[in-house]
Image 1: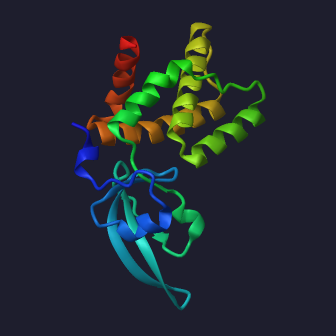
Image 2: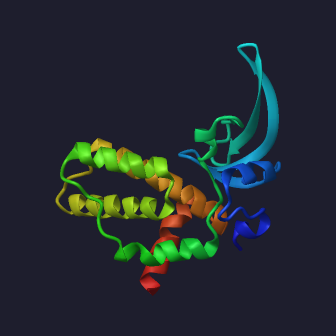
Length: 187
């Protein structure tokens, strides 16, 4: 059963409207942090000024807490609704059709991959994970391995994508790869 059925839906929300609707216990995706539970709002005094914050608790980073200022427009745009189970299925179904994002220049790769991570676009994240997975597989067959920069991007993209997939699908992050492989083998 998908967790999506248990949380308030925010699909295609505008950020301002969603911030007003967020309630303690809601689950969202936030920037490069991933899946977070809304803990509520708080007010803190910083440099003599009171500020309101939305308090987020990353689901898979137990010791972390994020305080997002409600008056910071740039940070507020990083709030995204979780995908639905159907949206995840569609992303997986389209994975084999997506073109590779591989660039020969490491600086071009770093720039492109950074943009994809920052955007939070799950379809592009899946494309990035697929590109680096296939590159890693190719290199291993030759007795080589991914460059450390590519490995870091691979892990970051995989963690961000698998974090959301696991939360929505109700499976562990370790089970997501097998879930994707099973779906692709049925296609």
